Amino acid sequence: MECRSWLNDPTVLIVADASVVINLNATGCSGTILDALPNRCAVPEQVALELEDGRRNGHNDADGLDELVAACQVEIVRLSNHGLQHFRTLVLGPAAQTLDDGEAATIAYALEQNAVALIDERKANRLCSERFNALHIGCTVDVLMHAAIEATLGRIGLAEAVFNALYNGRMRVPAHHVGWVVNLIGSERAEQCASLPRSVRRVEVL
Image (cartoon, rainbow, N blue to C red):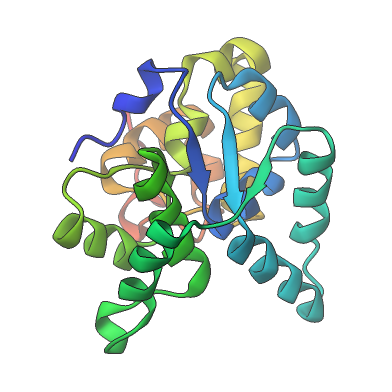
């Protein structure tokens, strides 16, 4: 399952889970990032509701999503009957084999639209690998690594955005992207990021 083939195809739709929206909001420049990204971005209504529920705990990511929708940078989408069939298989069953509604809807909509699912959580990635070999998956770091983002933000601006996503959003970084992240933000700032592996928070990556 190729994780980043979508980066080379601007016609491919990307479908973002709640964690991706949270991480992009945490960068402090989510609108600029989505403007630079050539792909259209969709968020299932289940993800929007999940972020709305976060208001009860003082989180404001629903506000950030609302701004992106108002600016036509993100589209809120609804599952078709075909997508709902996939959705049900992902939310019904033993806990070890099911996901929350937002993750399930993200995967289901990507399947029905032949799109890329942007998901950061390990469990969701594992279930996709086991059940949907043809599904293309990306993560927040894949978006931030896109050449168009650095071209827009500059190297320093990109480093600041990635650090903000790590420090404020606790962005998860897949193992194969850790070196790129630490080289970008520097080992001193990496030490401050609890979501990075402990092994790199004290070791300088050359």
